[in-house]
Amino acid sequence: MMYQFCLAAWLATIVAAAPAAAGPSIVVDVNSGRVLAEDDIFQRWYPASLSKLMTAYVAFRAIEAGEVTLQSPVRISRNAAKEPPSKMGYKPGSVLTLDNALKIIMVKSANDVATAIGESIAGSEFSFAARMNAESARLGMTGSHWVNAHGLHSEGQYTTAHDMAVLALAIKREYPQYAGYFTIEGLQAGKAKLENHNTLIGRFDGADGMKTGYTCPAGFNLAASATRGGRTILAVLLGEMSVSERAEKAAGLIAKGFQTNVAGAPHIDMLAPAGDVEPAAVNLRPVVCSQEARQARLENRDENGDTIFESPYLHEFTHEPRLVAVDLGGATGPKSPYFPEEVEYADVPIPTPRPDYTPTSVAAQ
Image 1: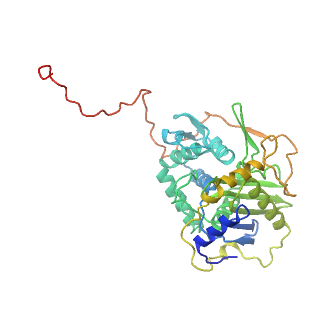
Image 2 (image 1 turned 135 degrees about the vertical axis):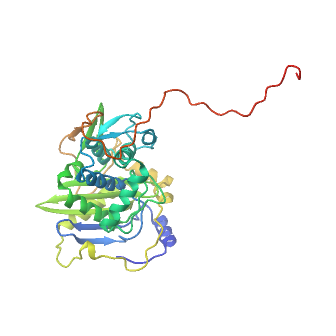
Image 3 (image 1 turned 180 degrees about the vertical axis):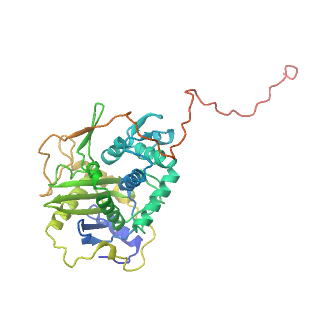
């Protein structure tokens, strides 16, 4: 249901009802583009790491344009290395392939690597964000705006459930050759084993994508898809209260989607806001990161610290997660035409300014 509402009153309702409250959602039949279910899909929301879907899409476009290949270098700059977690922690100057960088941002959701992708393809964070916005405009994502490649919180970075569904459909339809990036169960990075943050992968029959996102202001976001019998269903959920709630709700929505006929369902391109859209994105920090919410998430873990899922549509892994190896090096492809020039830094302390000082003469003493 789409309707105009008072943002402040609605947020107050969320606070009062937490943790049962939920944000916008949409369910789409990918083959036809028909919308099977939707709720508040034009409400602006902070995307968190769902932003990395747009980062990947811009990278795919750059490959298609001949600017780079999957073997092109992605260099970790000092700027990228300073990004807060989640991150890989590579040292400035480290180089990896675009192929491995894409795997890392889809599975580990590493912010340092996402920033490095943007800088290595477009020359700077600013230029890459401009590409993200240009692609949004071209795809008709009128409720989205981007300022970074990683999705860490910024008041100027927002999207909608509708727009994220449009983007996910574009990725699936335009670049089926890259579908494998969204189905990886885990990564092997040296001795570290990194399981995919998308907990439907390996636990929901037919799950084949796509990306999770979480910050306190955004809540727990998810774009998830599954394919059964040649039919693919996509669900986008924003503002859930926990990993388990977003996974369980997505599993239920996708399962119901497989049982729903597309006849009479509107095409996603036909949908438009019913009235004026609240211009401000919803900020869930007071709810999602309250002491009560954090405690509830801690209590929803087993003795091994793993999240407990109660959905009948989710099951345990039937095998050990299949890990894909990633590492530094191997970048034999061409650099982007906009690849930033490397700046050499001497590994010495930077002098700090001192207050003005005028020596006193011996005579004066």
